[in-house]
Image (cartoon, rainbow, N blue to C red; front, side, top):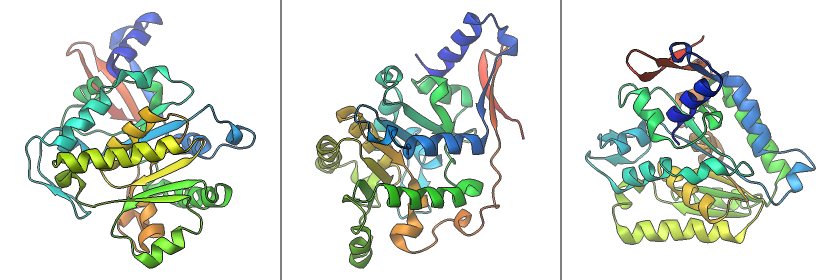
Length: 294
């Protein structure tokens, strides 16, 4: 069942007129605290081995790949346009209904209004997940970034040698040695993942590497920062072993892993103010739309 279908069914079950159908995602800040508590659970929940978590964030790059639009990323990767293997794999991951039936290891999607790429209605009908597992794609950045940095510090303190880093292979050897002081393991992937993903051998090896690693651990944190590859790799890791936490931290790891600012929000957290989303249904057009509450 897609997110769109789930919201409509919820309205019908609760006898809500479809013309008044509205689903509020929740505030940008409150969702951060909810996700942070799931990522870094307190004792004794942190000791449980029968739960997990996954969180992928869908941004412009991923959406453009899925819809065959050319991309020139702020990171050193690009796509010339047209159908891509990675874009197709991203779509397949969104369509995976098994995510809906694993409350012990919830799979969260970070979404946004991709109106310049596709309609919000189409976006919702692509995602097979209960809407309660929708959150913001910008959850860790902008005004939440200072809190995200505190989260990273607490994770390193509380889970020393229990964190698997999945980062780009441009990281210097000196920095890797520093990261290895607290990371359990570091997996390196290339920056130009979308182009390399077209090579079937590379694709299979990339998936095999994350699957093998996921199988080896339990109750560990996997911190991803490899661009669009993160979303597909998390999908395969979760399928292999849902009893870990697979989190797409994206560029929020850059200052820690690259020792430099790579995004404007890292030096000016007030640059972008993130609104609270409300999902509304236009009963006349039979379409879902998104609006902002602040």
